[in-house]
Image (cartoon, rainbow, N blue to C red; front, top):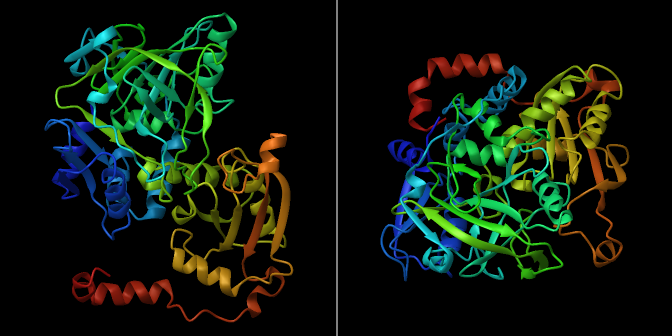
Length: 482
């Protein structure tokens, strides 16, 4: 694994997957170029330097994980693996058990090369982008981790929360109710205290992955989890105004205090959400910044929300697919593959490939996925296909969807399912009632089990013949990247 973000970028550059862009405008160009380049056939990791109005060396990196090779690199998976091979490798990692390894504290680290405290704090010194055209401000935190300590139990938590800069020493963080960070800050507020927090704005990819990992249990520090994920302890050093452990090799760390909402709030947003739509403004507690630590030539890590999950996450779709596959295997036989459709904003459309073994098998798979913890939140459509369909191949999935459903009995609607407040279908009436539920469709795009053997044969060539021809004509096919 990697000791910091820079080592990851260097490795990606050695793979020929980095593009340096000079002279871009933080207000109107960095976000647009990030979006445009993410949609290219081989999207590179982007490093923006000599940003308009800022000195050379104050950089922004985006599209870090927009290729499956870099996603695999960041998660220590087979770099040249297929999508399904990455899911299988992640599943093996999860099922083997990610054994916690506590962090190691060091006296100092690169993050302390520069320290601004009190009146010297000025967040505008960093080239923080406006990521989406209609965003309500500049967000230094899209690839960040927010670090807090439970005031009663003493353990350290961190999670991924977006961070908007409001003035030179004030930010807001988006913490959804029920997240561990939100639960911890409320403990401080209940005692009449501000909640100390440290925000890392660029770090080892494993830390970023752990911050967004599903189901790290309450009481287990993500630092310990990251150590298990990377196979080595994370080096941390004490913050200068919070005493929180911060990544010693982080690019930028903002230290501050989250005040209770009744004391001070700021209007946050609007902001482009991961669904691919603009959210409205929200009222968030203010965070007063006490100090900023940063490396020489710091890099802001940019993972702005996008309709492509590879822009804003590190393999979270792979992790969710692996976790759902493992969950399904605990209940039913015959699951041959699982994928979270990237083109559907990751959460919204899990796809399950199944070898049917009894009547109702496909419907059972869909119902399990609809109700389990992995995909029971914010999914819109759960799709089950036969085992001859690669769930990560959108062309094959659409073919099954178009040719193997009878709309009269292949589609079921489940009402009143858990969703997100950022759901674009979250209506004004939902908001008025504070009703965070939505309907969910279960689609079984499979050959009918009761006359499966009589279903028209596919014209697709059998795997055996495909492999035979590939072996004989390897040079020809290689020249066309087949």
